Image (cartoon, rainbow, N blue to C red; front, side, top):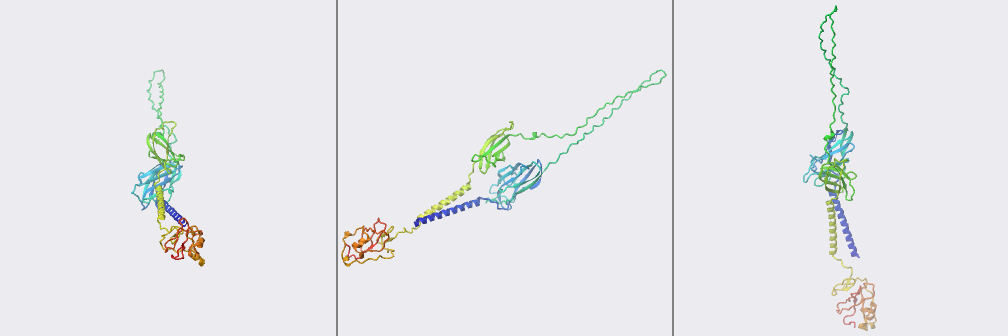
Length: 482
């Protein structure tokens, strides 16, 4: 029972060591791959303030400043008020981070993730990307960073961003009023009268006593040629539809999770346009020219790609969208599974080493005593070895036999192997039989044989019995028992 208890304690200790090692491994993994904001690097906007006229665009540069610390990756989220700003575009053109697998804007959030191919790194202030917004009303608004933004230190991947989410504040102004045309109509100029044609003097007539009379000439009516006044300058509105590009197909992409349900907040890229799915898991694209495209989707639940063919639906009435569905597949998390494999391997190694140690450790005996070549409780020793004195507290007191009893030798067949100690004493003589130790409470002793060697005063117990008793003859060999 003691040996079994020790084994159980050893196994418990091994199990405890395994748990401690597992916890240490998981803690190391979390410390290695976690990226809590603990540094002094900053995210900033340029310009951080200004005035924007309604219906005009503003370009805002997003920068990071890591000081003397080298970095190679940046992730940021930039929030905007959809009632004040309309997202137009975001690009990393001219930025220091050349690879941007995530670059999108929709529903009040611009999300960008960029990195530099190792071993390249950057320090100090660097441009990440440029976002363009359109002011759709008047008032004031702000752009702020999300709390999950990161600036990753090269080599360790630790997030060294200081966590300051303040971005920029902007005033949205009303456009200036265009000049109004004059309201009073111009007066037409006065038409000059046509000069009268001079009259020819009349020839005097001869007549009675009267004198010369002349017929007055009637002037001709002047011909008036009024000039048409010039019309005021007309303000013409340009034909806006003539400058608009002809739309291609309209595409609606539904993103499904591994469970078959729509997934919101997934970045979907089609023809270099990136749109985030809405609450119903749909991302819509307008103006996609007919052709074949590679559709890419990336989100928390996984990623997926698909080849699609877009046709022109702009001429249909009403305009219908081409619908496609894409199911996300969860990516294989190498760091997580590698950590689990290491913990399992360590636990198995500890168990194997513990078992080997238990199998090969020095034995401390079976706990059964051997006395003088007689098996008392376990494996015996060499019968020729010196007898081992029993650990009996005292030797039982024997009663001396009468003199006449000593002279009488019992019959050889009188002693049987089934006789008890009292029967042997009665048949042989109490002074000839001395019981030095009784190992068991069983009164019966099975005597198998008596050694012929006079020097060997031990008697072997029956191999089938669990107990044994050493019998020491008291008479010399010259007086053997017949």
